[in-house]
Image (cartoon, rainbow, N blue to C red):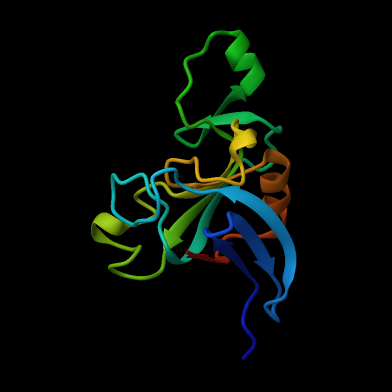
Length: 163
């Protein structure tokens, strides 16, 4: 049986690869993983390793640079800044693909659960930091890239995060 299409994320080179059924690279995107390193523990702010799936997609049809707080749209970043709205340190923008771990004890369940840690692939207001570790555990992408990827994948899509 042929392998399904998948996303492969390599933290060593800060890249996300979209692979076809033959495991050939279809698309490549620069990313930013955690500034705190690699790890699966709750509260570590580290990027988890292992097999995941996209469990939920949030932000379809939202404009580029829409800010999400608690996965709820808040408005366009520049408008919020102009209005003096207090924003979190790690601003999530444009799209969210929420990940769920598939490996019990590694990234699923207990204090290593990627879903309960709110680990996402998402857009960022810090595009200048893409290509180097800077996030609080999630996989950050440039806004145009995350919107493109969002349209190419669906819920249930496999995501493999490796060193």
